[in-house]
Length: 462
Ligand code: NAD
Image (cartoon, rainbow, N blue to C red; front, side, top):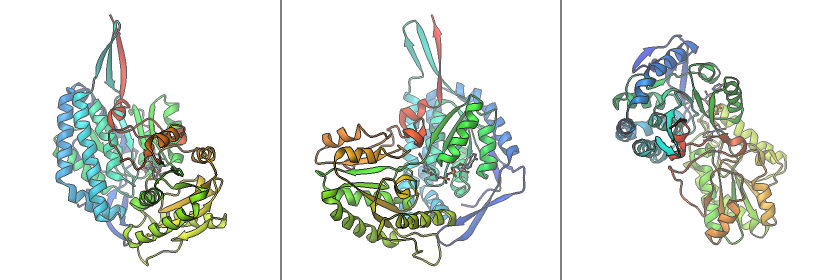
């Protein structure tokens, strides 16, 4: 698609207040593919005013009618699947088949789920002598990252609209084109003017202006823990609700009774998917000492097979960070068994699929989020030690447990301090609540739980 040179505010593309622009660069060949306007506080203010003006009408629209419009949005996204995939491939670098299957199809599924949930949700209930109304919180400021750029937009906008809220979106500066495409889809679906508004721009400028704006009732943020912490502090000072989806350092726990080959192969695929730029990736593989050497061999082999199949990282800055982590891992005593810090290609921000063995729990690569195709393999002597290692980071977003039977894996998963656990390779469920324990976040996205985040209750006593 061709980039717009304005902001989508109050149902139309309007000129930006300032003259600054942001270059959009293709990570696979480092070429500038387009430019979008760099929004200012003035653009944010115009967007918030539009969202506020549209709020009473949208909140009063019957939920089934809101659901029907979200359904229309879903249909537009489905019809523009190929264009979405090509746009994400161009600005994020993901291989086209992955963009089609995940970056384009997942948002369609999530939008479809909210078309149904809006119509079926119980917005009014009777408790004793009270009627409790679940009312929209108001104007939502949504700030999203670049790693699943359309999914993260839809995972905020669709439930917010289903709840009767209006939205101002500030997408990531690395991937603004698919956000503009989304605004076009909102328009095409016939969603009323002002219900959804888009301001592209830099985080510390447009993002911060949105998080601080007094006309915003709820800030919903997905991104790094550092920025999330500052957004939460700002929102807290203003007594404003905040939802945070932050980083992760998830454990893939392979118990001795598990099918080791399957657990390792799935674990490597999980980490390499989207070039390792997945907040819920199982970046720490925990293996019993009796199976350790075999698991390391299998993981190195599986990573090597990925070779050319993974895309680049999103930016030069991100690639430098990831290479720095690999070097630090080796310097702290980890053993490199696949990949490494060298660039595998002359052009593009690629990092080879990398596996570090002999990683111990206190090493930097076992504690900090790397956000690249890097797997660390750790050794444990018994289940209690595995649990201590699994729970031994500040994060708690996701994880996996493998065992001979589901019951054994579930017993272990129940003791993990984390928001999502895949049992013996269980599939991602777009209706199950997604979100973090500890510093991985506050609040939940997806499904009915995601919708509830955008509602507040009013109790009437009779
Ligand atoms: P980031 O925090 O730098 O940026 C995220 C968004 O916040 C962007 O839109 C950015 O412009 C904006 N932003 C930056 N500074 C801001 C400020 N001062 N005020 C307001 N907004 C600001 O993160 P990133 O590097 O773009 O994304 C990667 C991080 O996101 C990783 O840590 C990853 O784990 C996390 N993430 C979490 C989830 C989840 O669901 N938990 C999903 C995806 C990504």
